[in-house]
Length: 554
Ligand SMILES: Cc1cc2nc3c(=O)[nH]c(=O)nc-3n(C[C@H](O)[C@H](O)[C@H](O)COP(=O)(O)OP(=O)(O)OC[C@H]3O[C@@H](n4cnc5c(N)ncnc54)[C@H](O)[C@@H]3O)c2cc1C
Image 1: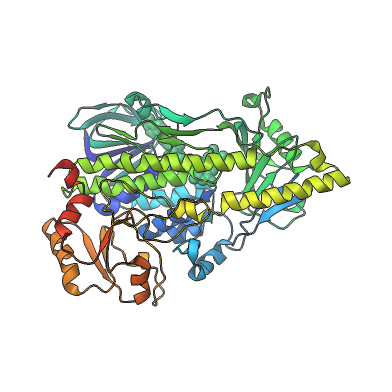
Image 2: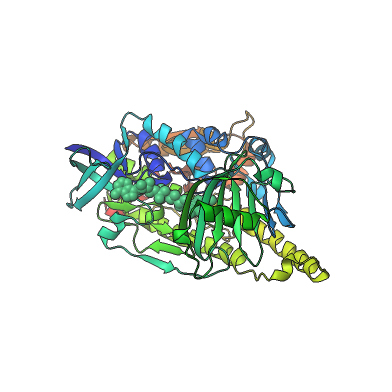
């Protein structure tokens, strides 16, 4: 029998992220995934800036940034009638190389350590896997499935087996089980937890069945007579679709809307060629690597994100329509939230009650983010398209002009989303200490940096070239922005007494104090402001609250 503190079922991005959060905190975990390895299909296309900041905290953002498109490949999003005909709208975005340079001079809503990275999930997962595997306490097993589990109250008993059945079942005894087992989560089903929210939404695009093709063709760029982009979207009355460049050379991810009555589940590689060529508006030589169908039109969140000793993260906990690119990113943030809490409980620094705050904090975020994706899907998918749009006539020219105006506005709504990525907050959480200040309004396209407790700490670049975030600890951080030493000492001593890993970070730049509006700021391991104030008078009580002792009455 294997005895392990945490059993993670699922080695997609959510499960891998959790293993990366537990490894450096010395919490041994066993991760099983039924697939032979990480994802073959491209899947998610966008790593949001906040996810990149978390990858940076863990030390591998630069490796992810090097994956996918070549460093000088544009990441524009552009709209066309067909890919080889009329361009309607475009949002120009920096290449990966420019992103690293530009972010150092950006401010306001994009005051950040990292910009987003447009890269297929299939390239991100191996980086996450390699880093998860480097921690001695992590046992990462692809080609292994969990067959069943029982929550015994005091622990979990589960059984795992190689997916090919080559060995008999092995029993695993874990303190906690994490279901990162995707949208069809057997763990969620066994818990009797359903999804709630909206589903079955119908739209001309991104609402209903979709046909996914992963293909190779060196001809695509030659056939598109427009500036190079990363994502191409068609707007025509016959077939709406998107094409995303996977490697910037010859591999593409393609997703087309299926119409009522089309038997897409039976479609073959031959059909894939037909559908891709229809949206290209010209012949295309291509090698089909995979075809699949999937359903757009969900905005679903599990009724509960935890039960007993079991936690749900990622698609097991919420199901998105991929507009805005929020599904995998929300899963990563689930893992970030749960990771430090499991570690604090495992090391005896916090009571079990701290784990209850995982669902309390993350369910509202899942509802918020699925709501934003739904808003983006409505905006792009409900646009009425008629054949006039493709006519070579004055009416056609006018229709294309109107569509261009519309999609030039839409693309900024869906793809310039600092508010979504940085503005998520845990206001009202019992482990956040409010200070009476009001959080800024939640808006998808603007983010207002604020150290109001409950949100992401404001970012700044330091004189020595480092990101302020690079100075934070792997555990808690006490950001001391000019308090006298004695004020911070109270926190430092209280943390030492409770064996809490607290890094005391002193910064004397007056502009930072103005940005944070207080001389002392307590920042959680997941880079969320837990408390801010002027002295350590309440240090003991603050630490008790932020670690959940107040909830447990300990
Ligand atoms: C077309 C498309 C485009 C998308 N674009 C984006 C985007 O741009 N940005 C974004 O954020 N998201 C996007 N997404 C969503 C994203 O792909 C998913 O949200 C993401 O993969 C979820 O990750 P996960 O780790 O939670 O689950 P998954 O990636 O589904 O991983 C679950 C894993 O659990 C394993 N598993 C299941 N049951 C068991 C078991 N009993 N034992 C062992 N292993 C098991 C499976 O093998 C699987 O590997 C897109 C999705 C689609 C379909």
